[in-house]
Each structure stands twice: as C-alpha cells, then as structure tokens.
Length: 166
Image (cartoon, rainbow, N blue to C red):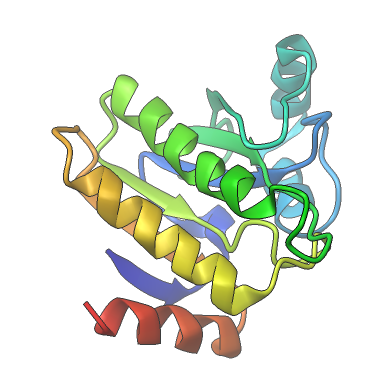
C-alpha cells in the first residue's frame, strides 16, 4: 500500500476507483474528472448498469484512461456519523476490492471516497480505507498493490501518517 498525490485519471493501473453518485452518470469532483477523461463511451456503459446503491460497486471498462477498468462505488454522504456512514464506507472498499479480485486484477487505485462533496471527515475516512485494505490483503487475492490517490497535500499527509503507523 502506498499513498500518492496525483490525478487518478492519469494512473497506469489495472483499475481506478470512481467515487461515484448513485446514477453512475458523472457529477462533480473525482466522478466528473473520470467521466470527462474516459469519454462518452463510459456514460453509455454506465447507463446500462442501472445505477448503484450506496456502499456497493460496479465495474466498467476504462475506455480512454490508462487504467483498463473503472470500479464505481457510491460512498455515503456524511450526516454526523449516525446514519450508518462508517459501515457504508467500509463496504465501498470491500466491494471494490472484491470486484478487482474476481476480475483477476493486480493493482488498484482509490481516491478519497466520500471526503469531498459528501463531507466525510478525512481522518476517519482515511483510517477506514487503510483498515479495510489491510484486512482484505490478508486474504488470498489477485490484488497485490493498492494506491491511495490523494488530491491535496493535506490528504496525502493524513494517509501517509496512517500508513506509517503500520
């Protein structure tokens, strides 16, 4: 596991994870950037998927991205921590990793799911992300590399601090 500061749409990995909305049809932040970079074919495939429930994940081709696949997961909107947000965010990571493993993928990159427009506190979200990935990596799986792709120096520092604690 490693944390980097980069534009997730430029990463050459088997799959990038999209912090999607329930419609899977693009939006703001990471979701919009991925849809713009991947091209119209992505929207056409997403339309066929019929949306996605919060905490679940679905996979599409990467189209014009360097990544072969996009795993779309819908994170929870932060409502103060009393609306099952933690369990739903944990589920985003588990379900995304499970899809990657089922497809035989070796490396995957995650953005900071739910921490932008959905307002999930970054420190707590990063701890959930790292914990879920560590637990998953204990299982037999094709996934051998996980990258946490951060947009800001502040987010990167939080992930690095958690990762360095071991």
